Length: 404
Image 1 (tube, rainbow, N blue to C red):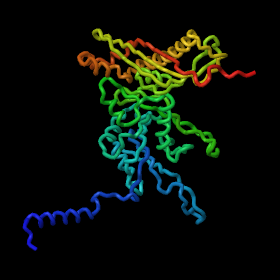
Image 2 (cartoon, one colour):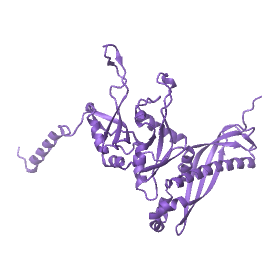
Image 3 (cartoon, one colour):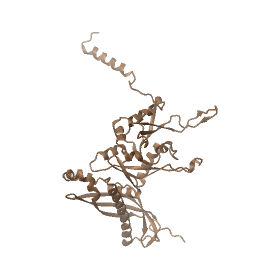
Image 4 (cartoon, rainbow, N blue to C red):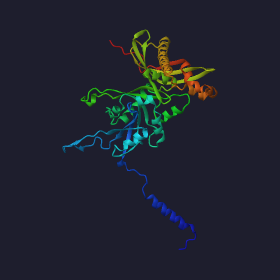
């Protein structure tokens, strides 16, 4: 049969070549059985030598599987992870030095958490951030933390409800942020890099305190969680300058308008020895700058709505005077937490609230004039705090339980 179109043979050859190429494997394909997946990484510095220290938790594919014991007996359990560390003059050298200690190629695509030791954080984390930003493997969704205590012990710790520490700290951060307002809003490396790049905004990270275990021979059901995640680490540039406790961190979140849920304990009106508990379920914040020359003042308007979760007062009168008293007490607690947070930030000379960033976004001409002097101006910035607190709900009962 005669082919009238001369392009048909050429097209057929192209299709055959394409099919042949599609049957071959990827040139850089790496089989899973030669890879070791890093689930959590910690960065530290050795004070005596100044060498960088990189410690990683690697998922163990043989974890909890039976293996032959030395005596040839029954299988023994292996932990679900392996912890290994190396040092180097640079972060990258230390990471490459890890490779010779592992039987598998270590990859960062499954890393869930990044830990900065307090020692390294005080000297500066710029070198670590450069690696995390420059390399293609590290996940931008990894959770960043500053650790007080031995970072290696945290990576080796046995968490009661999770197989690996990486999963444990990631889930714990999520649950705490969901239930209580005691952690800053920097939940990923992506947000961390945004904070560093934003004018007039200093970096703030969640804090982990490594806790001492109470005896190695204690049963698993009685072991405590080896990490307490609460409070915040405050940076100036890339250097750690101090910490905020739980209440100061709550004040930071009130001023940022990032309180999703908060628990407040108040004294009962007319019965100061009794306490009641309210839970905030909705809040917002508005900040307005007032600038005269180099003098900067902000008006902060905070609004919070809550419900009564526990009531130990003698009775629950619904008169307007009683309700107003509860609202005022709630507003005072919120105002005090904001004032504590502002005082600590001024002391550390770190604008973690982003007051300068508000000026940058809303008053660009003023910011251009104030930017170079902002570190000196910020500690003197006054904030007028107005809090509107309203208890909306009283639960399913109108009166406390009566006991004969």
